[in-house]
Image (cartoon, rainbow, N blue to C red):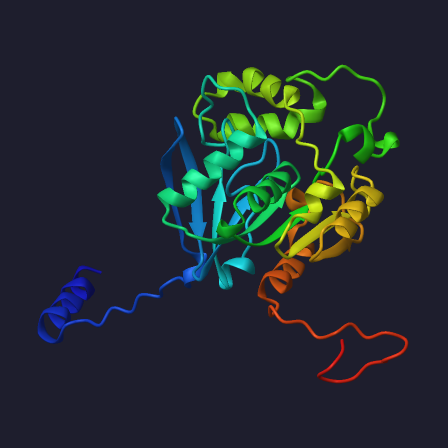
Length: 293
């Protein structure tokens, strides 16, 4: 072996060596960081190249717990950890949707993102819609999955509440969320405080008049077995002028933990579709190639 090594060394010294390094495709590479945002050190992850697409996870979820390999081939996907979520430490401030919007806007300014598409899951979808309502100039298209657009008592299927059990931070219902929090949070002992803050946070209620003011193209997506009522999603879809509706078969509220690949192609199609759309074919027109769809 020693002779072989000496022989190789002599070749290297005599003729040199060409080293071939296989670079990872850009959409596989990930950068991470913390941004000083309104008193927070907000954690974010960025993958892919192209126009920015900001992903706002659900309550308790955080950056990297779900990956989007198809989206990162076409867009620069920015995943964010909201106040108290994931690797963003909580601070002495109540949680509110208005504050989340301000924090997302400040993160965009820190990352020098003038305008971005948005995708929000559940809690995050409401934040994305509020961004589009309050700062339309900063928002391209908006996709939501399993999001509440009104009071829970009107939006959640009654049979999905389950038996009347007192929820606690140590209960079985939040075991997965708790375990993930303990895995990445800066202060794992803060779990019960953070949990109580989230439980006290009421969603912002959007009326049909609010939704009618959305000037962006919006995808309202929902699993057919979500605990959110299909009628609730359809009501939002019918109120938003440029809305599209997607009902994912055999999918629950937790699809993005479970099988995100069922939703991702629909998101990719939504965000990449041309701005100009052909007229809808009707019974009267039939299908006319290049004119109707």
